[in-house]
Length: 137
Image 1 (cartoon, rainbow, N blue to C red):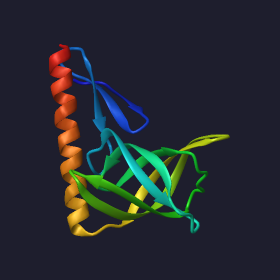
Image 2 (image 1 turned 180 degrees about the vertical axis):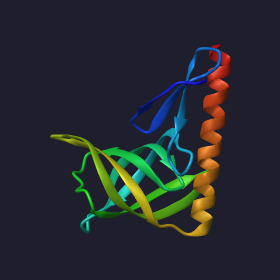
Image 3 (image 1 turned 135 degrees about the vertical axis):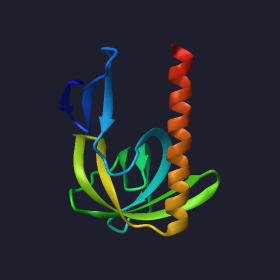
Image 4 (image 1 turned 60 degrees about the vertical axis):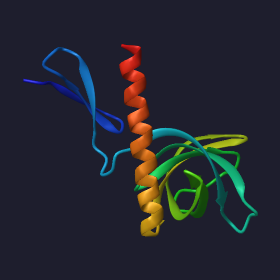
């Protein structure tokens, strides 16, 4: 019988072979990425952030502008050379320093074509990560 322990963002499960596996509790698959985005908030001209992880439901962003929980932002980035424009809400402040914020956002307004491009981006990133793991073994 597998054992498990809850952790942030997932559940650790001991497989039958004795190794631990992380099972996501999220509604959508999430992939670690490094993608540049422009974030528009409070009528600014746009500030460059890095998308650190993404799913079709939201993302983790890091950048040099303070954002508040509950704040609405516009996020502009590209997937496979195609522009994406989504409206998001800051749902969690993960880290705040003098010149850097790391936040989690939930996409609140996204058109179907952008959603599909993000799904493809996540799928490609997860496939790449699996290939890297296989090569490392």
